[in-house]
Length: 489
Image 1 (spheres, helix red, strand yellow):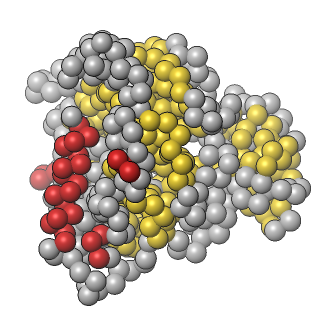
Image 2: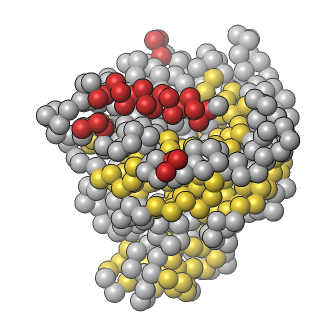
């Protein structure tokens, strides 16, 4: 079972660091705060090895997923900024005659839509699973913890969905599967909020002259870019079989923008595993887990496919930015994690300017027995209080993962749950201390709005609004969104 193997690996890791790490080691650059250590409840009913990036909900709390739990199939949890954790759902609560978890197993990242519900995927389980053959599901979770399975994969339409779903401009949710489809190398799909699924692209649909998947294979999660197209990466395939960057329209037309390892010794990087992020400059930023100096890279690529390697890791500043996407924070810099490297060889948190100047902010396992966590593999999230939050699958008080926070002094801001919308659309705006808000501006155009609670405003995209930042006037000052909002036709 996957959960047993990960538990064994985690315990072996802790045993190893106990022999090499002690409190006398030099202090790390910036301290993180461990908010919660998993497996703190009897029989690990709170889960272990958190998976998928955290996401902030309309209530201001963070939501995430783990492996393990009461039934062994993983959990969905919510946690406050103070570290109070509540398990909302335990997977594998329904088992069919084939021994498969009908409600899914091993959940990935979550999103919350404007209707207040959370949507996500499980990597395994579902109606069509049997024995060691497990395909995965798409589910909906009500804020109170009621779970509804919306779709069961059967391999022909995908297998092992990855990452968080992405709301599209048409009201559908878009996602990718790591395997399955006609070519068995993964798919891109869309699904309605009621569960109607359409496969848009099956990878490895054509082979190039070298015998590799021309359009790539094993895709990471998608992002929606300004203008309405989706962008992503694949782990293999392309000209050199070292992965690609691609663009896809909402109708499913896919264009390969770049094939990695195009330079001698793969100095441009190889094997991208993480989703991209679109910067405020319109370009896309991402990471590769290999290439460069051998420890992975950070790159920038334009919508036209021009790639620039911004940084090559050298192990001292981090190594192998595994599956953690970058985020662009309110100061304009990018932030990310590496699974290994750093002062204690257990991963790092780093900051990088858009020009590529990188600074290591924290080396994990800096505290005795890695109380601060170890080996982060998921993206950070900047909550609207300005601080960063993340998870590690190892370390913490019990060696089975932790939730941590990191503050660098950035102030509060607002963010939208969707990155785009048409005039007249209702948009959820998240923040802190929004009670008493006096005005909401979409790139300078005043909007009507309703304050739902201190952490949520619902505003209507006003006529005449253009793409740009959102500002909310409050008694404590004006709060600006961290990313631009795309006003679509």
